[in-house]
Image 1: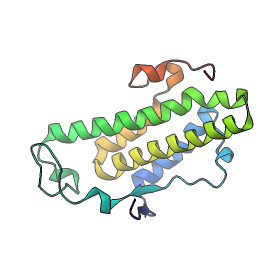
Image 2: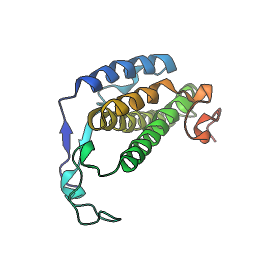
Image 3: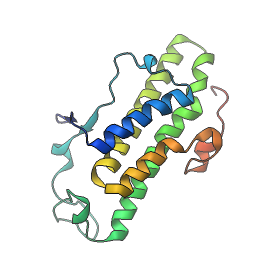
Length: 169
């Protein structure tokens, strides 16, 4: 993998979302101290991504850099929907599994599960960043919903992420 760009400066909308994220962690019982020195970085590998759309009706055209460059509202809506579903699954997974840390068969299992939960949160964090940064008020609303829905309440987008996970097998 080429060197990834790590985003250091966030928009005000995303800064507000970060505060909500901290509240979400508390609400679901995920202690941020479990993360140790882990950082929720936003990473982009622009070199590998290339500069042209690779397939479909817009193949060979420059990749869109801003929301309003996307030629049709239906395409913008589809992208927001896909990013929202992806982010929703990341946070739902943590909600489903974080209570299993107390019953891990071994310390190795506990640390492995915790590492997965860290990565799931980082992936969701990155999806929220995309929504808040590139999709205007619609994106900000969708990013907020990532933390409002809850697997325990059965309100996650995909049904399998609303099912309880009560054992390691």
